[in-house]
Length: 290
Image (cartoon, rainbow, N blue to C red; front, side, top):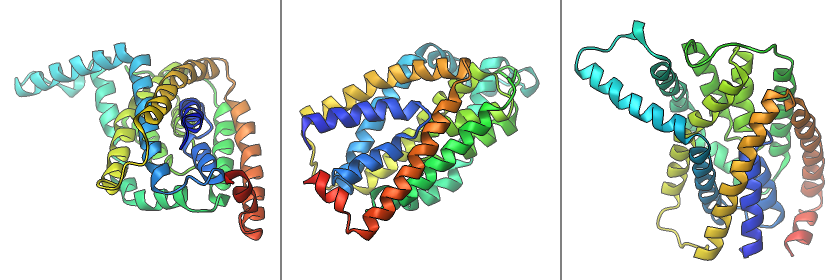
């Protein structure tokens, strides 16, 4: 993998991880057409996800630190006999809702091999179908009236629905940010809070998923040089921060629908290309990959 390819993938990961267009789907397409599917592609995807996790932390560090401090205070109250579910402050309610949103992942982790097989196979039709699903979801959520649920009154069912949306997001072509934010909007969450909860909720999930993937390829030769690795991760951090700001603006100004149109069009194109590739012995892939 060249330095330019690493930078391109880092930029692609940083932008598409948070914009509602599916980073895994775009990376899967890039790796397919450049012939980089397989373990090298999986390993580099893990590194790029690390970069986007850093971007989330930098963008929401104040809220994250506040939740961490409140978590330890809550633990102290539990052991001191002072904790009460009826007197939860907004920070503690958000902490419990974040924990609850991770519960559905206990089931979806059983599908990790299935998700991985779609990303690393030599076929892109499934990616096209998933892009279509993302487009429909974004367009539907754009029609939802503005909600008023925040961390102070978020309900358990809101967290579970967003957790289920996150569970299907590893499918290449299904946007994690798009599906979780859309689920939050459909449940009545206030728009800015839906974005904040979605991104912070994704941190432990993405970290855990990538640790599982890394465990699967542990002990294999490390095929990526340090400069290439740093270039890709740095690009993912910088463009991830840019994308987070863009999503906050998009949700506030009701412009999610434009990404719905984009993913619908991309899905149709990818399905057509996939059919052509399967019937021509992957001619386009061989031409691009050289």
